[in-house]
Image 1 (tube, rainbow, N blue to C red):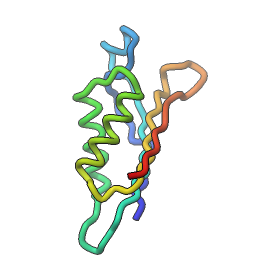
Image 2: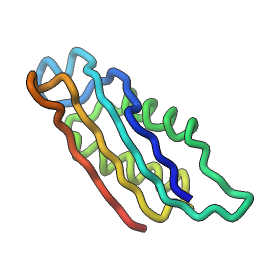
Image 3: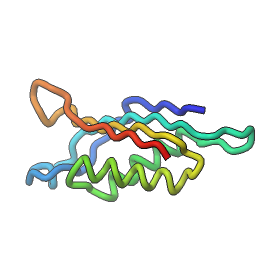
Image 4: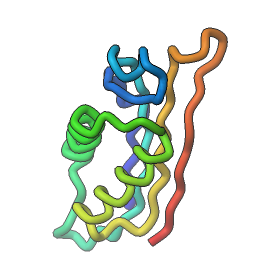
Length: 108
């Protein structure tokens, strides 16, 4: 089974610049999760959205790289049936003429 979450958008503290450490900025997160569905066990995508937003708000990551690695590990720990994950974090307002970000893909 594959869960697809696109454009989960909220404001949070993320970045290494002084202004990024004091003023929350908009992030857009997309996630694809492949997991084993056996008729009983399923992953609730609304819970995954809440999990990601809560983690980003409380962790206040400095680097997108750290956020991606940490979220990936935490999601796998919380949902052990995950087999593959693609996680993308975009910062749409940090560069005036582009939307920038990073993508992490993992297979377990």
